Image (cartoon, rainbow, N blue to C red; front, side, top):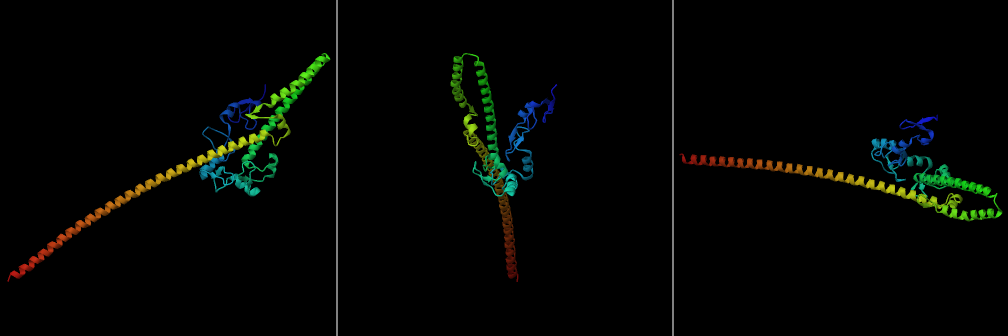
Amino acid sequence: MAALYACTKCHQRFPFEALSQGQQLCKECRIAHPVVKCTYCRTEYQQESKTNTICKKCAQNVQLYGTPKPCQYCNIIAAFIGNKCQRCTNSEKKYGPPYSCEQCKQQCAFDRKDDRKKVDGKLLCWLCTLSYKRVLQKTKEQRKHLSSSSRTSHQEKEQYSRLSGGHYNSQKTLSTSSIQNEIPKKKSKFESITTNGDSFSPDLALDSPGTDHFVIIAQLKEEVATLKKMLHQKDQMILEKEKKITELKADFQYQESQMRAKMNQMEKTHKDVTEQLQAKNRELLKQAAALSKSKKTEKSGAITSP
């Protein structure tokens, strides 16, 4: 009986070939927990749920420092402390100031000499390096597939030649000419194969590994996808700013209403105090008039009494 191995997520046992190479996940867990890119730092991680869109490290940083800002170099929204993300900060300390990326033209490519050998000597930023490596990997797999297909076709031709060797020379000549006539047809059909919607030339892919059209088209697709993600991030930033502006407006209106209420109360209090003082003043005037009248009466009585 073949040995069974446990899935690292659900812990059920499966044949080794049924598990993924890196994470050792079964098919169901690969579907339920796909590998996605973090919304903030753009690194790949195992998604726990559909609502979980950031990696664990960024989630911890959000709790500690709040929502990050775009990095001043790579423009990735991962600057939790200051204006630079941790990746660019570490790269700047190790490799010096950044250069312009040959792919995206942003000032965020650090001269990692060892990594440049893996991307045909190009000076690329981190995101463009990942994209370029994926393109090279796809191209390598397609070349391998083409090579295996070519060997299979060559073996079929040899078998056909051996089978046709026992017939008459005329039949052999006819068979050879048929094969020769058939080769260009197969080649033309093969050249029309499309990979991911792009025209792909096997001769070009095999003869010019660094500059073939497929690599350029794939790079452009990756660049468009990156720009779309950047646009989405910008939209999110605008929405956040609009939300903040709305909150500030609401707070301002609340403060203004509180100030108006306070001013109205002060005005009412002032009016009440003024009315009280005026009433008291009138009362005092009455008292003064009464005293003055009584004094006049006393004086006139004193004069008439002798």
